[in-house]
Image 1: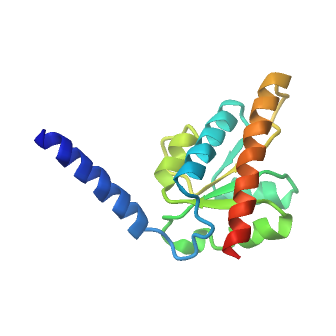
Image 2 (image 1 turned 180 degrees about the vertical axis):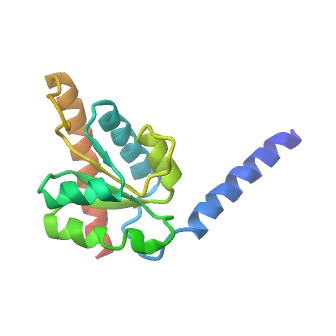
Amino acid sequence: MGSDTEGEKSIQKEEKKKIISLAPIAKPLAGKKLQKRTFKLIQKAAGNKCLKRGVKEVVKSIRRGQKGLCVIAGNISPIDVITHLPVLCEEAGVPYVYVPSKEDLAQAGATKRPTCCVLVMLKPAKGELSAEDLEKLKTDYEQVSEDVKELSTSVI
């Protein structure tokens, strides 16, 4: 019984720590439901090789005109690393959303190294997707993308 409450306390402390370390520019921030759906989308995209990880790759892809959904971690330090991304996304018409933790973002993207941002695309870097996989990815992508657009309009 005692370990249950201790475990719950440690989870609450961890959640509090994530919120405290959040950057002040992390808006629009995804809620719990949207976070969960976004991480599931990232996992599917990583499995289908439709994911760009890291600031350098994401910026390069957006500048080349590739479309997708940009997911940015909100607990990056120094914050200057990611401050140009929202502006770049808005200019290119790419929807973006913040999530509280870079560790969770990396876990969803199938890497061990914490990741600042990822770009979820519908087309893989090389080759083609099967029609079934593309359809699954597309439906999830559209759902999350609509929620993100809705969230960003409510923030502005």
